[in-house]
Image (cartoon, rainbow, N blue to C red):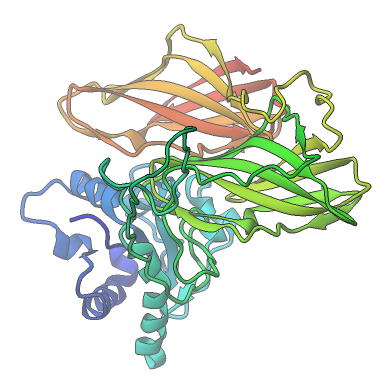
Length: 475
C-alpha cells in the first residue's frame, strides 16, 4: 500500500508516546497506513529491508523526539545519533533525502527542538522543520492539528491521464482549412484542500491559496502577440533548479501598453519528485531599477510527479525600463536570470530570440572509474563526474557503484559521501536509499549542489574505519 505515515522514534526515549500517536492516527486517518516497527514487522522479517521499503512508500515521516532522543547512548557511552548504523539516524536520512516526503519533528514529554549544531550533518536539515508539540493535557487537540497538517501531503498524487484523454488545459493548434474539431475534455479531481500547518516540506504542495489547483501535463495555449511586441533573447544559463525541481525560462517578450508594458514569460517546470508540486506566481519576482515586483498572472496549478508542464508568468513593467532580472525560487534556493527589454542579445553570448534553443548546460568531466573505499562489507567506486549548471547552483552528479562484498545485505547509507568546497563540508542533496543484497552490485547517482562559481572540490568517502579523498576539478 502506497502512502501513509512513518513514525520514527527511539524505543528507550519515547516508545509509549509513539504507540499512543500511532493509535490516534489510525483512529483519525482510518484509510491511511501508519507504520511503526513494533506493529509493522512480521516475525523473522528483515528490519532494515522493511524500514527501507516503507520509507520509499510513505508520504509523511513523523520524528518523535523526547527528552532523551538527542543524547541517548549505547552501552559503551557513545551517542547513538553519531553512529552510522543508528536506525533513527538512517530513517531520518532517508526521509530528508526525499523532497516529496513531509517530515515533521513531533515533540513529546516537554522536549525542545534540538539546535542544528547538535545534530549530525546528515540530518541537520531536521532543525529547519517546524515542530509540533504533543502535550498530555491537550493531546487530542494537538493530534487533530497535526492531522490537519499532514492530510494534504497524504492525498494521492494526480495521475497522468491516459493517452485517450487530454489534460484539463489544452493547447489547440488548428491548421488552415479545418472547419470543425470534436470537443475533448478531461475532468480532473480537485486535490483535497486543508489547513496548512508549519512544518510542510518545501517540495510538497505548500501554501497554495487556490482551493482547487489542477494538474498540468501539457503546455497551455499561448496568448496572441500584441502589435509591437518585442521577443527577448534568453541567456544561455536560463534554468534554476534544486533537489529534483528544474525551472526553465523558455521565452520572454515585452508587449507595449500605456504607462506600463507587459512582460510575458513562458516557463517550464520539470518535477522529478514522486509527489505533486505547486507551480504558481509566488515562485517568481522581477527586479527592475531596485524595485521587486510580483507577477500579475495568477498562475496556480499543480504539476504531478515525474512530469513536465509549462506556464505563463506576467509582470507589469514601467514603460521606460530597459533591463530587469527574473528571480526564481526552487525550494530554498533562488536564481537570477537577466533580461534586456530592448531585445538585444545577452552579454554572455548569442541566444535565439525567445530562447527556444535554451537547454541544460551539462558537462561530463570524467568517466574513468576511481576506487573510493573497500571493506569486508562494502566496496564503493566512483564511475564518473558530471556537472549541470543552473543560475542558482552548480549541480555535481557523481555516479557510484556499490558492491555488497559479503553475503550480508547492506544499506547504501553505510557509505557516507561529503563534498568539501573551501571551508564548507556539504552533504548530498540526493542520495538514494536502497538495500543491496549480499554479493550484489547496485549503481546510484549522488547529487551535490555547490555555489555556481565553484571550480575545485574534494570528494570525501567514508565507511566504517575506511576513508578516502578524491580531488575534483569542476566546470
